[in-house]
Length: 245
Length: 100
Image (cartoon, rainbow over all chains, first blue to last red; front, side):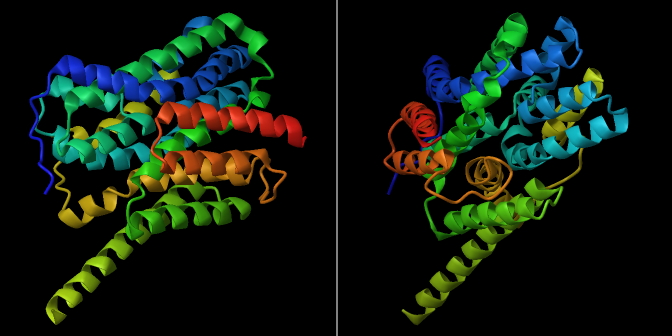
């Protein structure tokens, strides 16, 4: 049986590991950061507002859609509504982390909450599986490194301004797809996780083709429920087999 | 406007990390939540790959589909994430150059 580690690794080593693991994700997100900075200026935000977006909002998809909406003159209700819908997936991450983070002091809970992104969450969950415990230093360092890169990329986008136009053609969307594939595939270990991924993907394509507005949330729900159901069935089969023996 | 957006993005992240929220997540919900990362991330990458122009494009002429195939295979071989990301982006750019 594999030995379960109970912690006690030097923090510096954890920090280096976390930074190394998050680096490829930082690179893939650089063009998004550039775009966020440059687009914000084009949409009429000033330099400080553009940087403040990345410093305080710190959410790629929500920021891009937000500055586009601000540029289009959208009202507060539409802007905040769209931000809430795009960001709501983070509540799932927050809920899953609750068991690990709740016993930590307030400063840890606030900082881990602030740097909780898709990327940091996926890395921390993977690290958790590998080591058998939740490593707050690993989560914080990977989150902060990502935050730093995101803001530097935004700054570069602000400095370069309109020179980055045409970046949409540089395949920056595919960079995100590549990152997410690299994060998902190694964690598909059994029938349940495979079904979850399959149903989430197929249902997303269906919802998108139908032009359904809440496609991301709906597809996520389909995927999660499928994973859960298949896992339950697998357990039941295992129990029945056990009784037969 | 920025303050409002920041409040929203922080709130959805912090909500379940707050002690003041009297919720206990039962084991069933906890098990359901383990599927959140693969479900969300897949629902985000699949449209980029299969619907690059907003319409379903399942053909050998779709560079993102071919490059995603390369990414999946590479990720299955457990090479470093950096290699998966860089190699698949490079193949995407190359494929797009030659296919269009």
